[in-house]
Every structure is written in C-alpha cells, then in structure tokens.
Length: 255
Image (cartoon, rainbow, N blue to C red; front, side):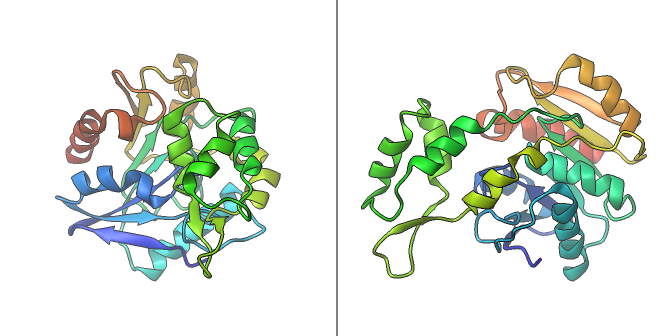
C-alpha cells in the first residue's frame, strides 16, 4: 500500500509512526525538532489520515506497508520511531525485517499483549452524526458524553474532514474497520525472536503502558534495549514533554 507522508529536513532518514486514531500531524511538531539533523518522514498508516483504506488491519500488513515505503523511497537503514500503535508496528517490523533499519525508538508501548481499552473512544466517534452536523463544535458536543477530557476530544477531531462537496463532514480514518479489528491493536510481539539492534524504549512516568515487569520481555526480544523514563509525562510523551523526549532520543542516536 502506498502510504501518504510528509518529509521535512535533510540527512539520515528517520521514519515516524503515529498511534491508533492518530495521524502524521500529531507528531509533526516533534518531527521538526529532529528535522534539524535528519530527513524525517511522517507517515499516515493505513486506515488513518490521508492514506488509503483497507479491510485488512493488523501488524503484519502495517509492517509490510512500512517495508514497501522503505523500498519505494530507497531508504538506507532508516531510524524508525513509533508511538503507541506505531511503536508496535515498529517492533513487529523489526522482527520481520531486522536488516532493513538502523535504530529503533519505541515510545510508551511494550511488546506484550494489551486488552482492548478503546471502547469509549470508539463510542464517541460512532456517536458523531457526520451526515447531519454543520460544525466541528457540534461534533465535539456529541462526543462529550463519552469523553470528558477536552484534549482527547480535540485530538480525535483532527480526524474530521469536510466531504468533497463541502456540505457534510466525514472521518478521515476508516472507523468501521478499526472498530472491527481493534483487538489486533492489542496483539503482542512474538517473544521467540531476538533483534540485536540498538533500541530505545521511552516511557512516560505517569503512564502505565510500560510497567517495570515489562523489562524482562523487552530484553528477551531486544537484548540491547535501553529503557528511559520521561518525568511529568503520560502516554502522549511527545506532546507533553517534547524537549525531554528530544534530549533522550538525540542522546541515543548519537551514542
């Protein structure tokens, strides 16, 4: 699948992958920090943003999309950084194509399996009557009973677009396919594989996505992995503490 992307900066290639319900826009501000030293490719993953929709939605096909992107753009050993679902894609890719990347950065996700925990978000998105609303404000009001956090609602509303005739709204993301395959997003990484490449795991101090007990599994799959914690950050590390994240990523890449 030919993914939509934007490229900023010059230098060694770096690919950045967003999480579920996200788009390349979510990491653009952080990507600009890295673009001072690297050529940063911000991708929309399948069924998200401006990339094509597909009935297939799992880590195998998303890893294949990433491989196709690297080959199409003739990228030599790119650095791959993924947040949340994007981190899982990056890990899955690393186990499938260990010779196709240089270094790996996984932001606030572990290789283990996670139970489905996106029900409220799916309910909120499904509650928006896209064919009836006349403004983004109306969409937000329809989401509010399900999601009280203003920031989360604003994050999700980045997926809302005007239809081609400009009369209605529609979701950029393939909501029905994501909803039907949401269990795939919690899938764990095969722990019978070892990837001996430099890997940095970054956890938010206020997030429970990477727990202390996950270190054993991380090191069993990625023996050279380093794990760092960003203070005063939850799951959205790149949005909450971009400077700290940039500092840790830069330190890792220069080591």
